[in-house]
Every structure is written in structure tokens, then in C-alpha cells.
Amino acid sequence: MRLQLIGQEVWNGLRRNLSVVVSVVLVTFISLSFVGAAILLQLQINQMKGFWYDRAQVGIYFCGPVDATETCTQTAATEEQVQAVQDVLASGAIAPYVGDVVFEDREQAYANFMEQFGGTASAEFASPETMNEALRVQPASPADAELIREATSALPGVLEVRDQQALLDPIFQVLNTASLAAIGVAVLMLVAAVLLISTTIRLSAFSRKRELGIMRLVGASNRFIQTPFIIEGVVAALLGAVLAAGSVIAIVHFFLQGYVAPMLQTIAIVTIDDALLVAPVLVGIGVLFAGVAAAVAIRRYLRI
Amino acid sequence: MIRFDEVSKTYSRKARPALESISLEILKGEFVFLVGASGSGKSTLIRMVLREERPTSGEVHVLGQRLQALPSRRVPFFRRNLGVVFQDFRLLHNKTVYENVAFTLQVIGKSRGFISEAVPDVLKIVGLAGKASRLPHELSGGEQQRVAIARAVVNRPPILLADEPTGNLDPSTSAGIMALLARINEGGTTVVMATHEASIVDSMQKRVVELDAGRIMRDEASGSYRRQLAAYDDEDQDADEGAEVRA
Image 1 (cartoon, rainbow over the protein chains, first blue to last red):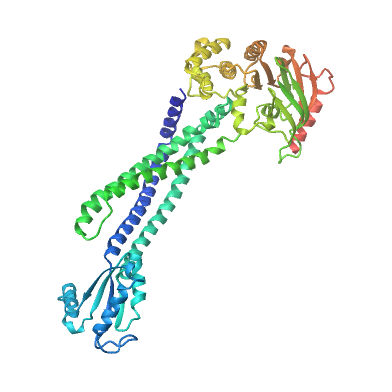
Image 2 (cartoon, each protein chain N blue to C red):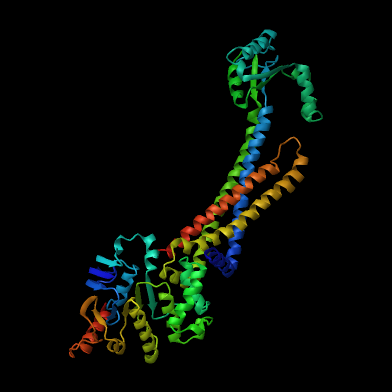
């Protein structure tokens, strides 16, 4: 009986304020979509970091005949100097942080360069002599790159130690900023959604003022009075959250996996599994926020 | 049943207290009229019994409970022991007579079986057995008040509070309502009724508590509306109204 009565109250409330309820649904939908986008962007960043950092090498470049720096004396690095660097990498203190080490001579470096930049203006001035010998070092883990750089950059015959991760950082920074922006928009929209929900509940309570007065008079418990309103807010928000979850899944499935992923085959794009993970989070946030907002909004009508 | 000990109530905005040192005891099964001019404190007193208001000082005991000590979340359960009737009936316009009465029982969680027995019973008691499916606007004022009374007593509360229940009704309809309240009182329910209709008070010959400016002026068993001293009447009331305008 009570459940039926509460259900009826909820239904009446939703129907009576249909336009406001629709706006709650839409605002919740948009705000949670932004939340979902922000979460997906973070997942994407982590995935790309994992992907690229695993492949990012530390390049130890040796002096050529024209280089003059603290460690180079305008003579090409000797074989002993190259060997000395390799010995450092193999020594007990550094070895645990070092994976594969590959030596690249001038011919290989030239071949790699031509492969990347062949046909461009800079390729015309390149010759094997202008290339530097190098050691391609794979760090044991991405965090170890800095250690390898510190251990080798001051050794004689070493021109420069370049960490490829440093090249990737600006990309991640841009993505990170984008995700922070999405979070910012999401927070603003969530605030709007919460305020709108509490206004809707107040309006709904106001239109049922007479019933509420009688309920209080005859001794309806607070929980009985507030439950329909909280459910009302939660139902509206739930609709919005489900729409948001659906749109996040649809975007990942149709746009990212269906359109972007085939074009960028070298980059791992977030998958439908990630989206399915995000969906319940969105629904959870929507329900929680709506429930709390409605409960706070209705409190005024429960004061005795 | 109901006991007031030195109860005062001051609203912050008003300098004059709404109630001042009220001490009053109402016993089980009594029928008590609260009389006095508008603003004399009758409604405040009733609201205090309902714990809609708390006294500024003094203590209110109802049904063995000290109301100041009653936590807010227990108040709804406390109110289930009180029936209340108002001048403006306070019915739900979109619900039928039956539904209005049943609503009370639904919201306090009574079973469907209990409701389907109790509601027709109480409608018979108030004389509306044949009008269960009418909507409030299809009824006369007196009938609407009978619905309100049915709603107030359907849960068989030990106390029935009535704040000017005949205020909107003509004299003959009022007499019917009073007969109903008297019958409910005979069944053992304590009835406290605020009114300023002299003829009703005089004809019932019940206990009368007269309030004036928040103080008890007299408390007589089987009294009448006005004190038997002729000099009091109009003059005093005029002075009182004058005071209110100034406030």
C-alpha cells in the first residue's frame, strides 16, 4: 500500500512539473556527458603514456669531428670512449635500470634519418659524416630514463643525451589540459544540475503544500514525506545519467573505434570496455547528486 | 492528558508575549472550550499541544510526554495520538471523501484491510455513510467539516483538538457539528475546542477556559461564554483591540 502510494506520488510529481523535469534530465545529461568525456580523456592519456613510454628510448649521442662542448673537443668520440659509456650502462649500479642497448653507427643513423626525412630540404645537406654515432638505450621502466641521462651525459665523448619522453610530454600536457577543461565544464554543469534539481523539488513540494501540511498534521513520518520527492529527483537525474552513459558509449563505439581508430592505427584509442566502465560511474554520480540535492531541498518542508 | 506549567511564549518580533504564565490541566474525557478574542492565545495554545510551537519558558506535558524533551523525529509519531480539526477543513480537493479519510491511515502505514474497515465505520459515525465517493466541493460546509472530523478521529486518538471548527458554518449546521463532537467526547475522547461563538459555549455547559492577551482570565467547570459580571464585556474588548492596533 505504502509503496503504491509513494509510487503514485512520484508519478504525479513528475507529471505535474513535466517541463522542469525535462530540463533536469537535459542538464544532467549534458553535465554527466562532460564528466564522462573527462574520464575517458584521462583513460586515453594513461593508455597513450603506457604505449609511448614503453617505446621511448634514451639516445646517447657521441661527439662528431665538428662538435665543441664541455665533453667534446672537436674530435670524434673514440671507440674507447664508446666502450666506457657502455661499461657504465652495464655496471652494477645502473644495470638494473637499463634494458636493451643498441649501438647505432653513422651509416645506420643516416639510413634512419633518410627514412624519416628523405625528400625534405634538410635531407639534401645530410651525409653519413654529418651524423653522430649513438647508443639507443631502452630504460627498464619509463621513470628510469632520467637516471640514465644523469649517469652518462657528463662522460667524455658524449655530445648529448636525449630522452624521447621529453618530446612526448607537451602532447600529454595538451591532452591533460583538455581533460581538466572538460572537468571544469563538468563541475559547473553539475552545480547547475544540482541547483536545478533542488529548485524542481522545491517547486514540486510547493505545489503539494496542502498535502504536505495534512501529512504532517496526521503524523506521517519524515521519511514517508520525503521519499517521493527524493525518488522524483533521482528518477529525473537517472534518465539524464542513462542518456549520458549511452552517448559516451555511442561516441566511443561509433566515432572513436569506428572512425578515429582505423585512421590512427599506431595509437591505442580507448575501447568500448573503457566506456562500459565509465557508464556506471556516471549513473552513480547522477543518482548520488540528485538524491542529496533533493533531500536537502525538501528538508525545509519537514521542519516541525 | 494535557498539562501546562507556567508556560510563556514570546515571539521575537512582538514585545507582548502570546502566552504568559499559563498553567492548565485537562483531564481524560473532558470537554474544554477555549474562549477569548482573536489574538488572545487560543491558537498558540493548541499549536503547543501539537508541538508545532515550543514554549519560551515553562513545560507542556501531553499524554505523559514532556514535549520539550520530544526529539523532532518522534513528533510525527506523537501526533498520531492527536486528532485536529480546523475552521478551513483542510481537505484534499482532488480526493473523494473516502480517500481523504483513508489518506490519513495510508500515510501512517495502516494496512489495506484496516483502512477498508475503519473508513466506512467512521463515515457512518459522522453521518456521511452515503457520500463516500463525493468530492469535497460537492459537499456543504457542514459536510466538509464532518469529513475533517472523520479524518481526525479515524485513528481513534485520545485527544481531539478543534480550532474554531464552526467558524465557517451557519448556526444550525454548527449545532450538528457540536452534537457530533459531544458524541465523540462521550466515547471517551478528550476534546479541546477553541471558539468565540457564545451560543455554542452557552448551550453546551462544559468547562470554559477564557484567555485574554495570553493570560487565563477564568477557568470554570460548566461555564458560559461570558463572565457573569456584566461590566466586563465590550469596554474591555475595545481596549484590547486598541492595544493590538498599536502593536
